[in-house]
Image (cartoon, rainbow, N blue to C red; front, side, top):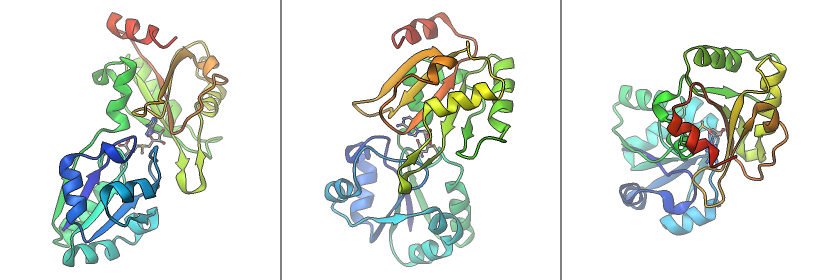
Length: 242
Ligand SMILES: C[S@@+](CC[C@H](N)C(=O)[O-])C[C@H]1O[C@@H](n2cnc3c(N)ncnc32)[C@H](O)[C@@H]1O
């Protein structure tokens, strides 16, 4: 059996009761550690879950998934995913592979960055297509096109920012804002920067996109939003973070 368990955004205690019960009865526990990062160490997770955790990199989850699925045919294998299982495009491939190979799969959901941005007060229903800004972005146009299309329709745009947790490397809101302005997005547009949402030390700041190039955010991971048309309740809500 393969259990894909979302473990939430912040620390060891964000796991659901259902998720924790399955982790405790698993024979092997992996932590997918390349699409996001938690606000606690692996040893804190191990202590709270009472289980040894094996780190699973992109190679194991995406290219060497046969190994994982073979194991899941004979044992209860839990793959822990920071945030929610479906808030990264990478896990659906594993689920399809598992089902093709007749490995049973159970999913346990949790909070994700995709709903935590609701903390800003922006209505989740008003977000358009989500886009990611990669580290090597000098010649990348997709995030710009996504923004332009969303903005034309009045939708908010969420920019996810690249990270390599293994190397402790995270793209900052400052870098992302510089990239967007360099590629033609107007610096006077309103923007919302969010750092480490879900943690006690989360930061939300509202200002112009130009201000986002230098505003200080001290925590990671970070993401950036450029709102589209605002309802008056959204305007009131954003004012709290100016
Ligand atoms: C692939 S996505 C999220 C995957 C995760 N499975 C989830 O459900 O949240 C990873 C990106 O989301 C953003 N992100 C994730 N957690 C965040 C947090 N707590 N605060 C701010 N941004 C976050 C960052 O831009 C990061 O690079």
